[in-house]
Length: 324
Image (cartoon, rainbow, N blue to C red; front, top):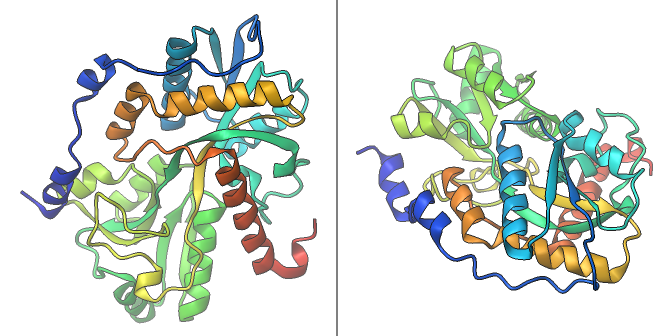
């Protein structure tokens, strides 16, 4: 048994099927009398069939089961969920429109231009999970950690890393600056393309969420570092960037549930409680097992704190470019 599987045994949970059959045991949310009186629209900021789509549909199902409501799921993909967020701005804050996307899209991004919204424009209902990112490479790569990657880049003249999105690109730029090496971010459309380039030997490494886990388990890939603020449970022996001496900002992102700003307090409380029950349901926890992640609702205040903190960090990095 390889090391990945040995470590993973400590994370074994009941099977998805068994957990899905367990009683939800949820209490109905505290809602205004008569709410909702019609179906609630649930807008997903990513395309059908992906991981975030599965998260949204599982949460919608859990809410329906716990509350007896009807939830209509609609995908509005584009710009890492910015298209969905933009559409919420034009909707009434009456509780009949909920969005699910990435907190990243609410953080200032110097490469995206003016998106015409700010995180303060929305009502946050909670989060569904933290996104975990890893630095990974083929098991045959001539480096095993950040120090040896830096040495490899110096000897070879450069090292290339497939990245999907601004946050991953920022990590590579900061590493290149800190170590004064030619570390090149190769932008791709998503994790699938990033994996194809890495497995095909077209780039030296990649930053991934979960798409690389099967390759880690098979021994075909290895993890170089956790790009999150903590070690990850499926590779507890792999240190974080900070533990390896890197000063690059760790990626902090959550799958966030949001709604138009200005929502009445009683409806907001109702939806926040319904979201919390769904995220803590056995059905949703079972889905997280398949993602090698865990259900986690930071709550509205926790989500706002993470987004505002991350936003301030990025703006500080770019100085005068980050005008409000």
